[in-house]
Length: 233
Image 1: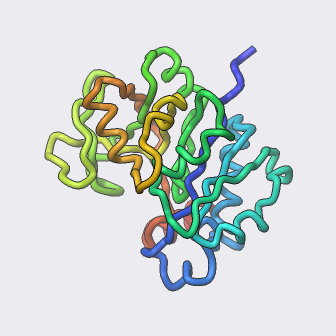
Image 2: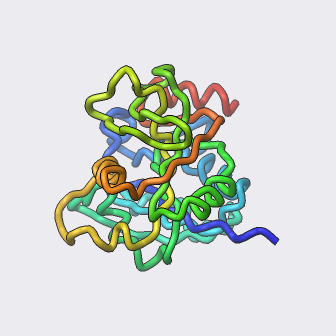
Image 3: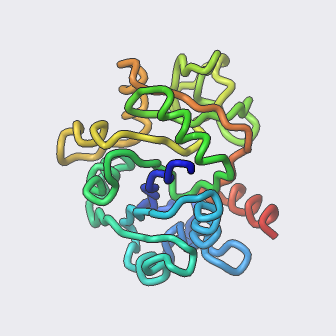
């Protein structure tokens, strides 16, 4: 019998500035994708991959997400909520605040990502690697966004979202796996972002990697939103 999948911390608290004016009235998670909020598609995908528990890290217009998604039973999921508002804590800070709901090990997923990968295989790779954190990577070659990971022979050699190099042919896929100690060690207060945490972990030799073959989809931009609407028709 296979091991149950870790819970997912779903980062759905951002302002969605690139999707204005739509996000002036609704949070990005509830932007319409073919007649339903994006979050509906995302939660169904997670349930289909075997995920059972999701902690929604909410912020901007989070009450709308809570009212719409409820306890998650209609998606076959158990949903809980962790809120940071009006002071946004950043993606890593939001996870730190949600630790009491997440347990010892968990996935972290960006709230604007649609990732049809094998979550069980990612969890297995994390277990086998024996490190406190794992980043999934995809060979992007600059096709769908700026590649930001130098990856070779199963290892991340460099990661930089702000200053990519020509050797970076992979991209941060948008799904991480962590032990809770990684976030518990962060100083309380202030804004902390996941990208900075990944770089710190890499520098300390504490970041494993799992390469996935399924491309990512996203609704963080207008182009990404239209593309996802097309493929989910």
